[in-house]
Image 1 (cartoon, rainbow, N blue to C red):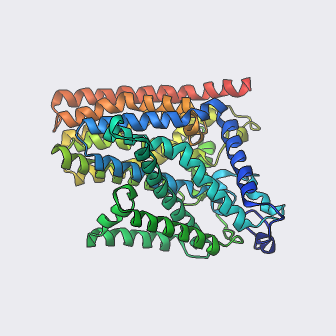
Image 2: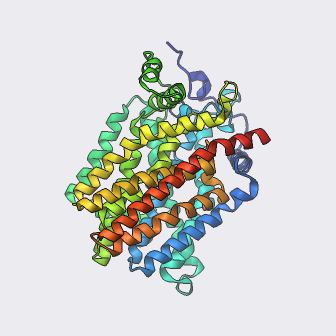
Image 3: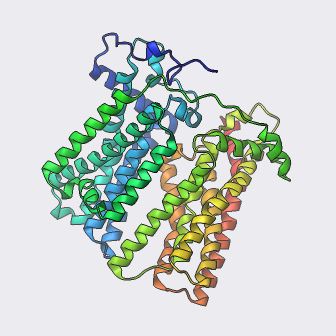
Length: 494
């Protein structure tokens, strides 16, 4: 039995001790400096500094393309707000990087956020300042470039600086809503509420809102720029109240209970008829033992399925044209390869293998095998659901399956070749992120266009797309096979 301790290992009495004369502005300044130092040292100063410009370019380009193809401006504005909420939901977890709940994601860190274990700083006050810093930092570095999409909606001449400023505030507010929601859920979890109860409550709320037709008012609230100033002010006050209440509810002494497990390593390793079975087994067990376990790739693919299905409905309502579901879902669901690979590597690092008599190429080969074992069922189930739900023809479904397999291998190879063992971190590197985006767009955009133009697909188009999917998959295999030697040479050079 482990002793009660705080999320950073301190005793319960240390968690709430008062600060030693450190003012909040001074604390925020130190946190901002650490945030900048962390990102610039990880990704290179100019590479990270260029990232907001990449976001602005992608946002404006995508918005122009949507508006020019007939998408309603209100739909574009709502989509940008959905992205801001989603980014806020993700960012809300950063303040708990030192907790047991996310320790298996980030590893044991020694950040300023963890200094409450050694310095007379209140854990709650430090956490509150950290979340405030995150909200301000990302509102400027990420949400502000997103707000430039307003230029493409109304046109530069019709969008004065004040309108851009209001659009930015609207996006920043819903970003804060996402952060506060995540913080509230984690705070409730530290009070002993099971994860399945939280998930069930969220699911029932969504289903109930859909069944009663009350999701419309929710949308109007979460797009403040389309509502009244009073509604926006109420949302801001409510967000602050939720954030403050979450910090009060949050239990700094929470720690995951100790667990015991059987020798699954030997059983799985013996069951795999592979030379790299031990390395593959390690990757699979790292995923299984983490929070959420092997369900995380399925959840990620299901979320992507829901987003794509919603997009199909929006496009159909606007243009009256529904794409070929097999081709459309096969091409887009392959993008889940990035998240699946991220789940398989976020508990790992290449440095951990350097002490063993194995090559880096062996490690990458084992990750590729683990990716196929985990990723194949994770995308197959949502894809089957999509083609059945949208009543795809047999030819369309078969072509989509080939595209799904080929594009998933390609996206995986592209990710591992560019990012190595750090697929999550490279998203903050402007050069790598832009390279990855272009690499994804080259095969995906023509495929989606073809899926819209010819519905159902003709025999000629079906053969061409299937061959294209096979070629793209081969390219992905070549990239992934070259990733090992490439990163081996880089580590030797360093």
